[in-house]
Image (cartoon, rainbow, N blue to C red; front, side):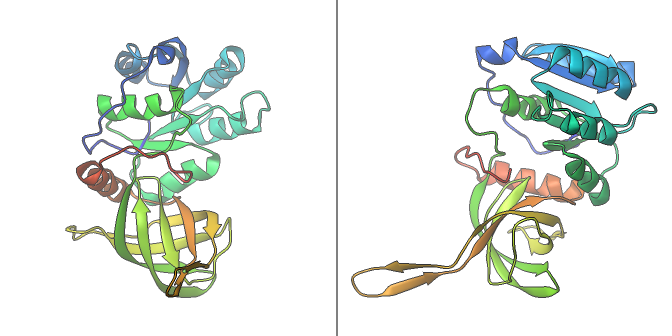
Length: 264
């Protein structure tokens, strides 16, 4: 089953409110043992239903109208990608959150899950706290479902639309970032990034989708006019498991508050 992360960072699961326990999570996998493990992890925080295989999962989703679908990516009859697409194309299910669980830690597989419509992606092997935290974000009545993010000032190289230029990562989560840059970009562009987190030797090279823009702005004070750079809210698309793990650990070590970001 799937979800970033193999798990890794030491996430602090939000305490499920009482309403979470009345909400339904549908777990879809073709391996009964994994269904049992996931059910055990989530059974104390939500109402759990299971389906063996993608076709059974789709039928169960249409019957149960669950509050969240947790599905494996590799199933023989209907894989997780196609199941996610079916959910997104069904008017009655289109807005149902989907968390996909991956066995493959590659950036391309992560990107395929995001493009299929997954709201979050986790990579096996799963840790209980990681899974519970991911599920609770979508089941709680909090108005925000964003991943924890932190402010930072990290240099980044931005590559998009045949242009390459510098920028600054202003804040970041496992799921995305806000980047200030003069590289010309528009919403829905998929761009490349290269940056290193402070204290880490790993160069992160995710691709990311531009989901919103902030144009150049001017702030006038009594003595001068300050010009601010334009920026873009980004959702990571292709990102490998070690990079996702590094981001999770970085945010865990530095975060002070939880803030839901529109780009996750």
